[in-house]
Length: 79
Image (cartoon, rainbow, N blue to C red; front, side, top):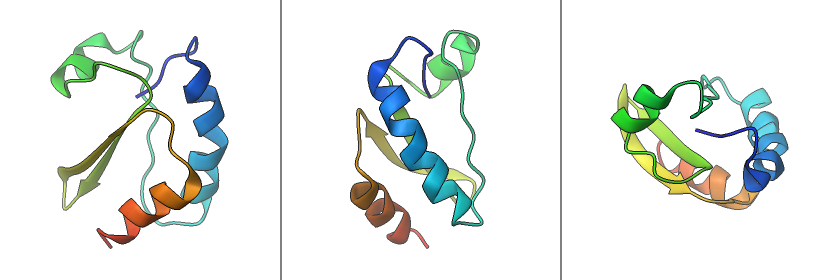
C-alpha cells in the first residue's frame, strides 16, 4: 500500500521492483487514496505498508521504509 505523495514509498519502490523481477510471486501496488476501502479492509494506517501473503492469507505486515535485506529475509521465511 502506497501513496503518490509518500516519500518513503518512492524510496521503497525500486527495491520492491528489483525483488519482484527476481521472484515468481505476484506483486501488487495499491494506492491508498484511490482504494480507500481496500486500505481500510487491511487496516492500513501508515504508508508504505507491505503485506506478504502466504497460501492466500496475510502472513507478514511491514510498515515504513524497509531495506532490501529485510524484505528478502521476510520473503525467504515464507518460501
